[in-house]
Length: 238
Image (tube, rainbow, N blue to C red; front, side):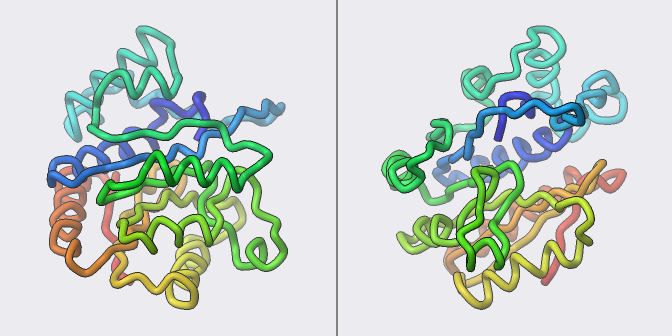
C-alpha cells in the first residue's frame, strides 16, 4: 500500500469491505504492508479517482464512504494513510510502518500490533508471493510472504488478503495460484473470494476458521448485493 493509492476506485471497494466486516461486530486489524513510492515514467498507480466526480454513478454503493473519500482526495488533496485512518471510516487497529530491510523484525512488530483481532486484513501492493518467489526467496516488499500470512492464521485469526491481478496474467491463473497456496500450504478451514473488476481485477481472499464462516457468508452476500450493481463487485465460488 502506498499513500498515492488512497481514494483510488479500488480503495473505494476495499474500504467498503472493511466496513462490512466491522458491521458484523468482528474485531479488525489492518496491516497496510506500506511501501515507499517509487516514481517511474509510467507510474499510473492510484490514478483512478475520476469516479469521485461522478456521484450519480458511484455514490449509491456507500454514500458516507464516498463523501469522505471525495473530501480527502478532491477537497483536501491529502492522500495519506494517516489521513484515512483519522477519518474513522472503519474501526480497526492499524499497522502502518513501512516495510524495512529487516523484514523479520518488521513482521514481528506487525504481529505484535495486530494480535487479538478476529480478522486481519493484509494490503500489499501486488498480493501474495508466487510459488516461484516462495521457492527462490524472491518476494519483494510488494508481496505478502506465505509464511507471514500463515503466522496470522496459525494464531487463529481469520485473514483477508488483497490480491491484484498482474499484467499479462489471466484472471483464472491469478486465482488458481492463490488457491494452490491454500490447498498445498495454508489449508484453512474454508475460503471465500470477492472480485472487484473495475479497470483491473482486484480480489479479496478470505481464509477463515469454520466458526466464522456464517459471518463471512453474510458479509460476502451483503457486498455482492450492495456493491453488485454495474458489475462493481461479485462473489466467486471456488
